[in-house]
Image 1 (cartoon, helix red, strand yellow):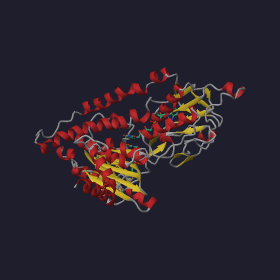
Image 2 (tube, protein in one colour; image 1 turned 120 degrees about the vertical axis):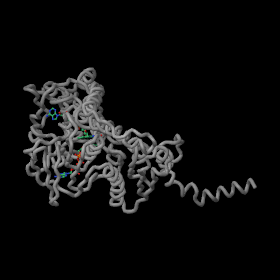
Image 3 (cartoon, protein in one colour; image 1 turned 90 degrees about the vertical axis):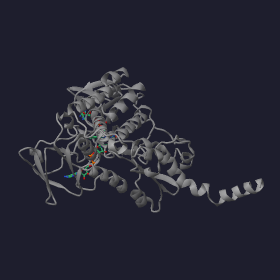
Image 4 (spheres, helix red, strand yellow; image 1 turned 135 degrees about the horizontal axis):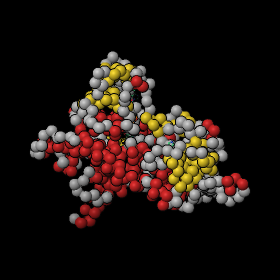
Length: 491
Ligand SMILES: Cc1cc2nc3c(=O)[nH]c(=O)nc-3n(C[C@H](O)[C@H](O)[C@H](O)COP(=O)(O)OP(=O)(O)OC[C@H]3O[C@@H](n4cnc5c(N)ncnc54)[C@H](O)[C@@H]3O)c2cc1C
Ligand SMILES: NC(=O)c1ccc[n+]([C@@H]2O[C@H](COP(=O)([O-])OP(=O)(O)OC[C@H]3O[C@@H](n4cnc5c(N)ncnc54)[C@H](O)[C@@H]3O)[C@@H](O)[C@H]2O)c1
């Protein structure tokens, strides 16, 4: 990719001797020890750079402590409860499960504790990272950072400060005790009736988890639930949630929240209202940039987060912003990937950029909802004419044998290239890899269709949908003509 181009190293200028270089305490300062910051700090330290990693709270950030890990652990417990409930369909009669919420919580805690050493201070110190506990603040545009009275200085800074829950402007909300992903895990009993504000992945995953654990759940979403996903795939998940008893009010905006004797009451713009015991606000995110000194450092913040280019440089090119704090998609794998891009830019001087074309995301409801690249609608808007190939789970022997046939794989091509894939169904998240490679141009549908895939697996769906696109060529006029010649020679 870089052949023939003169590479201007984007690494620390060790060659620049003199006062400024000597005053520098580090080669790189990383602020925030979540998925993004840990990847950047660890990678650069392992290349031999002097790295400071500043964290004001828990190592591992949101994903480990209040996001992906606890939510997936809670969903796992909820899915077990549902499997017990639904066993009768396959002849296993167990009835309504007893949910011991204390033990569910212990399972969630144990999952966090088991993964925590991976993100621990000890692990990063062993790689040579100086882990500093405290709140960091940029002092100027030159690369000076203050933490607890100590001033650090480095030629490059990586901002990886993550995001916080966005609290919508709803009358009365500030006056009632509501939950967010930061406090949800402290609940010591199952809510009787959880009202969820927000129909994105965070709200919908928790809606299904709490419903399956036995709570009544109502979701209020100001727009279409799963707003970024393929509507047909989203409808399939919404149908399942509805069948399980989750009440969903789409296109409904919460306007007022008041306390009631036992809980709270949420009023909405349509005049409809609901009373619940608990309220979970999962209405999007805002970049965590308060008090960070961005103005002094010449770093611009847009409404969606810190403004960055493809290399994740901010408006101050010495300062990169990666992960949830910048404007863009907010996922752990995106944060980690951007950490790697930072290592390439800062550690190796390679001007690598982030390519979003094959970005996957998965919502871990049951059925799972996975999207890579463009949805069908987005592809039509961008490319005009598109080719769509689809295979239903109902056609897959494994899905039939397991009695779980809701779902499909849809692959979207534009000008012969795969530009997007939607997978909804059991284990959809585990099926993204071939399509990620196809969108990145590293595997062709032809290669996927020719792979030998074990029977019976859901992976056969990917092979089948790839084959559907190749079928006209395989059994087309040229192949038939050639087969005719071969047959005539043998007759
Ligand atoms: C409920 C929920 C479930 C999720 N599930 C998934 C999932 O299944 N898959 C997925 O891909 N994504 C998921 N996400 C999104 C994922 O958690 C985030 O995209 C990811 O954690 C972002 O990582 P990050 O490193 O950018 O930020 P963070 O993990 O938020 O880390 C930022 C760190 O910076 C620290 N910090 C901030 N300011 C300062 C400062 N001034 N000084 C020092 N330290 C500072 C913070 O304390 C924090 O530790 C989920 C999110 C939520 C809310
Ligand atoms: N499986 C995953 O990868 C996963 C899971 C959870 C969260 N996340 C990430 O975490 C972040 C946060 O997720 P999220 O679901 O909170 O955000 P989101 O932006 O995806 O969804 C926000 C939802 O809140 C609704 N909303 C906003 N204001 C409202 C109001 N006043 N009344 C009613 N509804 C309102 C919107 O209509 C939308 O449905 C996202 O960036 C997401 O990518 C990822």
